Amino acid sequence: MRGRISAESNSYLMNKLCKCCWLLIVFFLPSLFLFSQENRAQYPGFLKNSYFNFNFGYINFPFSSEQLEPGYQAESVTNHHFGMRLIFFGHQFNKNLAAQVSYMKPLQYAIYNNVNGDKEKHSVWMHSGTLSLKGQVPVSKKISAYGEGGLAIFSRRGFKINDAFAVKDFSYSTVLLGAGLEYHLHPKWGLLANFSYAPGNSEHKQPHELFYSAGVKYNLTPVPDEIVKRNAASGYIFPKNILQFGYSTNALGYGPNNFLSKKMPIFWGGGIEIEKGFTLRYQKNIFHTRKVFSFDAGISAGYWKSKEKKEDVYTFSIFPTLRFTAIRSKPADIYLFYSVAGPSYISKTIVDEKDSGKHFTFQDFMGFGGFLGNQKKLNAEISINHYSNGNIFVYNRGFKIPLTFTVGYTF
Image: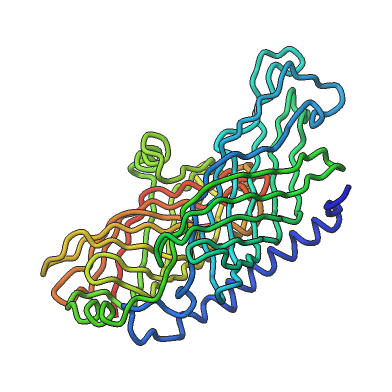
């Protein structure tokens, strides 16, 4: 029972976390758009000394017959042990203290084989999101040791046999503890060796989690002054503000969504299909390099109509956009763009009789577009969109948004 948070406390904590997310969306993050970055060739304050990590290694949730409900037996249980952890935003407050947000999952899920003689394979999904503090001290000129402590939110999606749970769905919150070493390869790059542990939940027969990994860290160190001056004086246009209106339609089908989620898996599909919709977006450029890369922060509102039951759904989001300008010319600057994990509110959680989870979700979109004309005042894009909670909650059918055609104006 040690390290366990009760079901009542867990439910209360989950609700409080969701409410905090809403407050963050409604009040805090939009305030970023009120501040003007004096020189967009330098990272703004909240990005300076931030970082992100990619970690891969051995993960262990020791699932066994213990997780089966009474009356069920499995011939065997297969636990796969290759996992990943993505720290998609960390910030170094000083040389000894940082905070970070991460997402962790096994790359293959646990499998229950031949339950009650059905000759089938049944998977149990596990995902987690974490929020933690990281303290570090130097061991040598190139090596630092660190410890980590914080909160982990786990979701387990079990399975049913004949409409009855053999392994139940379960979400819970618990502590996260970790330690590791970092080799400072370069001011921008580090190599990591990590260990983390999260207790299980005996009341709901949830095993603990162990994760041993190695990874790569990229630091957003301040851009040197001479490079800032060079990039700012390049003469290439990176619009400060973009106001966009988009129309989504499945008149051409879901081919791009399916191709980029199945044939070339660099995006996501979704179990809830949208027939049509409208979006209004505002984006503000907060950083750019000399010619190719720019980073925008945006807010958006969307209206969607589902394909099957023609239900109305509304979304409100904040989001980052990564833009890569491939072609520069007088008539048009052509670019690719990708936005991921934009915190969002969605008005309905059950659409077309499918459960998408909770009102808190994430917005993702990708596509290509252009800034048109000599002054690049006009904007046009084609994209596909997606909403889902990344499996941090048990249910996550996801919304598949078809081709979206967007027009905009820059200022």
